[in-house]
Length: 335
Image (tube, rainbow, N blue to C red; front, side):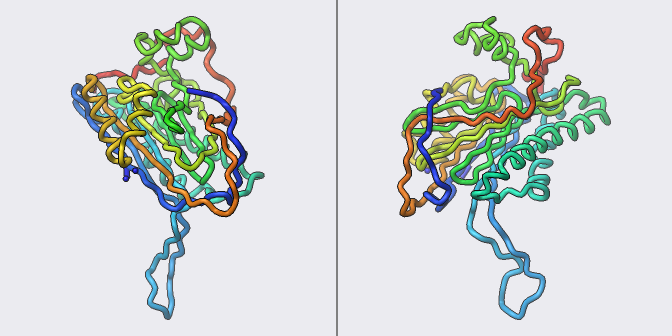
């Protein structure tokens, strides 16, 4: 493919069993049919080592880049009305990019003892971005209370780390099945988990558009960074999207679209068109990535189910008796 829900147990993977040969990724964002502007943002970036040459007697370029070692994918869905939501999502993505480049020791390949530190740093970046949005919001009454969802996928083969707040989503598609990796931080999902709402009624609930956890926002509660790890297999596809897609395209349709598409670009365009055909009432963003890996002499022992490692870094989820609407951020405000 080109640029842009089952639980189980994975078989074992060794870091040296496979290596990334290529990264095939593509992303698109669309204003949709109703909104007056697009408050979504996305980013696809390769991770590679580089060397900056300051002086040499050789005919070398000033910067020499190595091959791709991994990839960063991001989707952010701003909210707050008019320009505020667009500013919040832009701030989140640009701030995270700068901090990732300058602060994270990302190439800890095989350094298992550093994983906890790495995960805590990723979560810290999300809460740091949230604080920046709130500071910016406090300086301009027109942007007061602005916020954004943020879903970040950080791939260092075969590990995929997903850092998340809000109701944008990350899926992993394997063997024709799509599993949602992230949790929707909506009051409707919270009600389902508490037994107060049937799962089949969640999508149509009035509380499905009210978020209790975002970057920035109106609440005084600290942003909670959800962090999960997936051990990928060759052939897996990673999908990030805003709620403008998943409110119209369920995981079964998503998996079928990935399966029948000849390229990741074709998959993204097809998914985007499905959301538009379904109504397109919100901004729509889709990112699809397929790591192309080369197998080495080791045999990969792997099952087909997707096993999640959930890092519970922050445990103060809002209580189940949270007054609905009192502390949540509506993600369908005009704009």
